[in-house]
Image 1 (cartoon, one colour):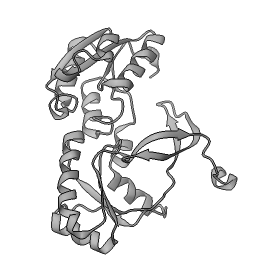
Image 2 (spheres, helix red, strand yellow):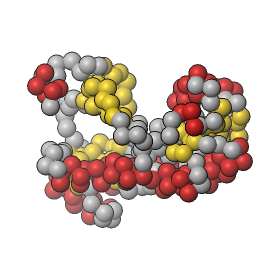
Image 3 (cartoon, rainbow, N blue to C red):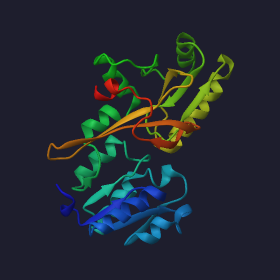
Image 4 (cartoon, rainbow, N blue to C red):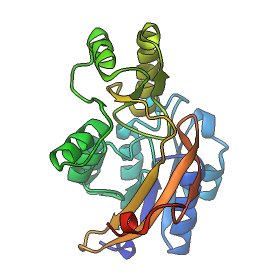
Length: 258
């Protein structure tokens, strides 16, 4: 499928990312549908889209994470594709599968890729099987608080508690002392459930003064793939990227070539 097969795109998100998608669709001659909660009724993306539909109250779990409401809007508007933006449902394999079941193109990775990479726990297991070094930690299925606390003791403090789904710095807590672990775990799980609809977490040993370097690869349905080289995202605030620099400064040439 090419963009020419998409006559109308619903953006299942809000804010700047929704506005960016709307602007791109307009350049390509594609109609757009926005969705919004009570809190975003007068937001910019609502004003910019060709159509806009209310999908619920402010809590994301009752609006932007409600795939049934979003798919209902898609059906009522004759939407041919849904762009999830980032966060919310963008890494939700069930939503991608539901789009396919409703004959709507999910503008994003295929379901197997989301299954493999949408969960940090699953992607870590894949990396370990491929002999790729990973940060020491725990990414198993046991979510019992006391069991997780015992794993933190094994890993050694300080540890980082991470939501297995989502991103954007949400659902993450740094814990430096054992006595703070359970409160931090509870707060992390609440935030993860609110932001991503799932409170599963993993644990990692906290790396002091790390470098965060990403290598971006894009592929399409026709078997074409391209990379955009690397970027350094080490400048962060509260685990949220503030500045991205490309090419990454100080990265050895041989590392870049590999």
